[in-house]
Length: 68
Image (cartoon, rainbow, N blue to C red; front, side):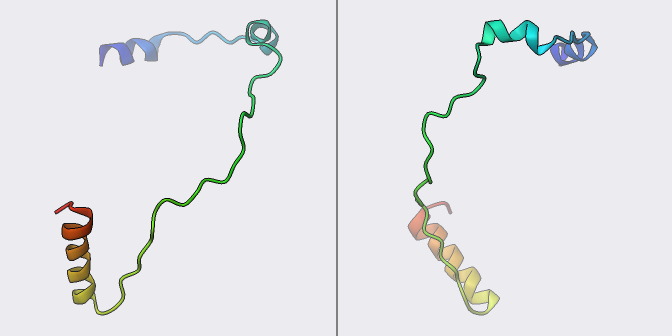
């Protein structure tokens, strides 16, 4: 908490990009790999009356995912 209060009161120094660029180099970012992520989750829709959907959901959470 004390550190955040001190940082809040500390003055910010503005610098121009020309001052910082020699230390950073010509490119600020580089793309190493571009791809579409593979789907890893299987979405399931539970249909029916709310009471049945709730029972199915609790059953899945207990038996398949083992959260409850």
